[in-house]
Picture 1 (cartoon, rainbow, N blue to C red):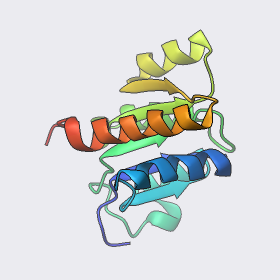
Picture 2: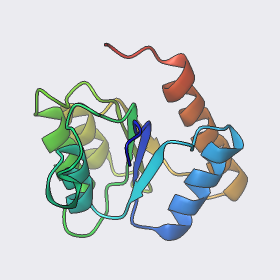
Picture 3: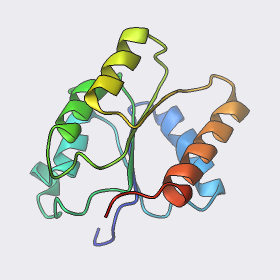
Picture 4: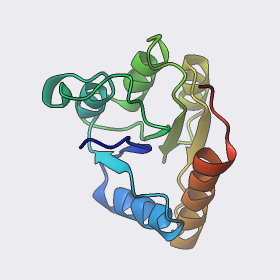
Length: 145
């Protein structure tokens, strides 16, 4: 892949990933999307290591949609690594998870999450939430250069 990734979706649930991609495609926001299924793969991608050592670490996504409950390395650890590294800490990270647990919310914001969104259970509400997230972070938000 030689193009700039705009959205990095880190989600181990294939059904949630498919719904998210569908909602983003509906708004023409999924053209430069990469979907990864676990935290270790996400860190390798973000930091240009392992299978992704051909990437440049400076090619950061415009936004990362990050699930918390994942195999290998969980989302909180991924968030911590992203936000504690000078090269990646400005990348917006949106926690998109089913966890409504206050300790998770507190910890994510403490670590520097830009937003914490609980996945709606109802299909239409899920699509709407992801569409609005995509539109805001890809078109409305003005990130630092």
